Image (tube, rainbow, N blue to C red):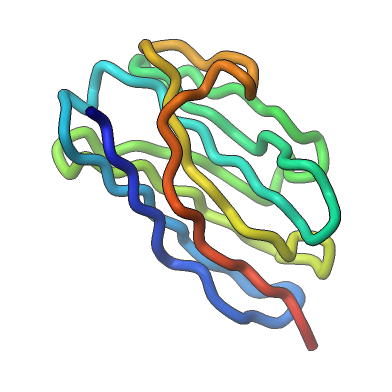
Length: 123
């Protein structure tokens, strides 16, 4: 059973950066794609970015282009989400998730989820 744990969230000011981490355990991590998602108060969960086992990146949200990047370190069983130039509207709980395979897929196909890490952007 794949288990995912997010960390790295916090309270930041607009324009600042954070690096979120998604640590995996339980199975062979490099056999799974990993995606980052977020859910703002009162809104539906939305996809952000995903990285496949071969490093192919899927962008789910146009609003993060040029500001967020995703990477993975299979040796550390960890996927990172670097979030730069944060805006008020980036405030959300950020989740990492994995589908049952190596490719990035639609949100509803992800079946392993972490508990989330809060990112709050405030002045």
